[in-house]
Structures are given as C-alpha cells and as structure tokens.
Amino acid sequence: MPELRDGKFVCDFAFFVDITLKLNGLNKELQGKQNLLSDMYHSVRNFTDNLELWIAKVSDGEVSDFHHLSNCNTHATNDYEEQLQALKCELDTRFLDFGPMWSDIVLFTNPLSIHSAEPCSPPPVSA
Image (cartoon, rainbow, N blue to C red; front, top):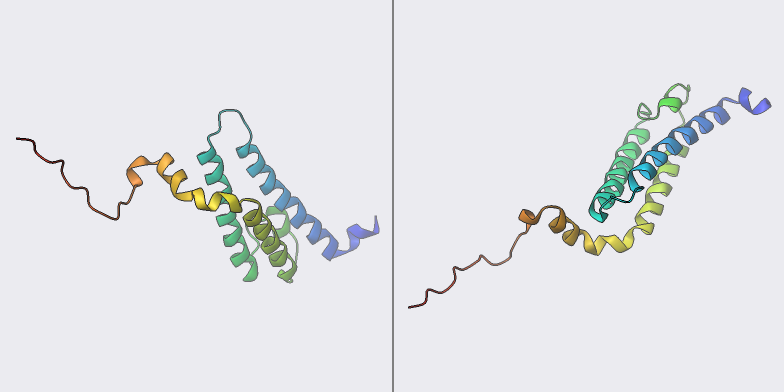
C-alpha cells in the first residue's frame, strides 16, 4: 500500500485510531441497564472536559495523550486541533438539551449541594 509510505497519512490514521479508542471508552461507559442518567451525563461532561484539555495540549504541539499519534514524527497538529474542536462542537450540540437540567442532575447526585438564595427561617413556635 503506497499510503503507508506517506508519513502524513500514517499520522492521520494514528490520530483516527486514538480518537476512536477514546470514543469507544465513552461508549462503553454509557452502555448498560443499571446506569443512572446522572452517571451518563457526568461521563459525557468528563469526556468534553477532556476534549478541551486535549485541544489545548494539541494546540501547543503536545500529543502525549494520543498513544499512536505520539509515535509519529509530526509537528503539524493544526488539523488534529480542528478535528477535536469539531468533535467537541458535535457533542455539545447533541447534548444541548441536558444543559438546562444540569442543576437538577447535580441535586439528584448530591442533595446536600443545594444553594438557597434565601436563608431558611425556623418554623414558628406555637403557644
């Protein structure tokens, strides 16, 4: 295969393999009958937070989070940064409906995390 002699193709393919492995990991976290919505939402949020981290690192030329890509001798990471940005945008769009539910999900996950705007007053004492 002549493509395997092309260094850019091999690096692009390595990036594709790495990002597919990461997406497969997210997919496995989201599967199962016993998963709570809050757990699945946290998995997606953690993944998008990681995407932001990966975007920042790749923009600085660091690809150590991508095992196969880090074995390539590549200095042009702009394409990979754009691909990660596009993936983040796609995930943000697909899970846009969950944004307004975030406070409810947090409350469900940790009921003690509620923040009241008004302090609670003690009940009136009956005589």
